[in-house]
Length: 236
Image (tube, rainbow, N blue to C red):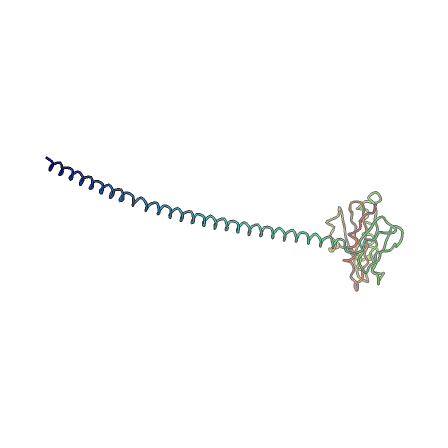
């Protein structure tokens, strides 16, 4: 009986030892595979985060660079356009203001007189703007209010003056006068023994102006006279 109990106890202990070994092996096998995925996952996440950060940084840097280039280009173009516009405007102002502003002693107007020319009173209501070293080359200036004379009458009077200079030649329209900036204008010319005579009538805001230019072929001052004559303005 004692022998049987001893055998039973031994068998039971052996069974328990085997069971314990089996459980330990199972736990070890179950535990080892779990650690590997954890390491792979962390590595994958780190790589993903690093790649995402690099991509985002690169994209942001490129966007900032492109934005900066576009803004710089736009600013440069704006500055260039602004500079060109200002330069053009300044050049036009200089051209319009060329010469010295002089007021007539006899009539109610002022004009810009270029160097080399002088303005003097010729007779009542008539001034003479002449070449400083050749008084025979000059422009007669007459100004009227619209109440004193109308444009048609002033033009007809100018044509009669040209006819008296050269009765044998019909006056032709002068091509070197641009009256686009005036309300009304007319310009004619005839040849003379010394050169040419040009008659101009124009109406601005407050005056009707009549100009008669006596030029010489050796001087050719008609263009200067026209340029100065177009600056005539009423003086209040």
